[in-house]
Length: 138
Image (cartoon, rainbow, N blue to C red; front, side):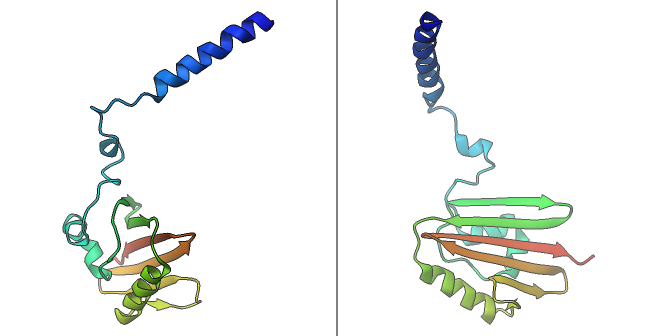
């Protein structure tokens, strides 16, 4: 039994070493739908026109993801290592654009002629998370 364990340990270490080696010719971001590529707000609005209904985000767009589920459009931004003032400034922009945080929980809502818009804002430990959602009215 002990001999089997002694053979198993080096085998597991070898497997971890092989699996852990990164093939630099592969682009991990491509398999993630481009969500790790750095981009600008303007280029994202061009790709996803519903974002024009939200105030421009001034922080870094390094980790972002778009999805469409049952007709609802959603764009999520995770901004790491940022100051809380970025959250405060974006919340001020939302209020100025007519969004309302009805319950004070960081969930802002607004209705346009096309969409029911919702923005969820959360800041914890230097990370700002934004979820921008547009639910078509038709």
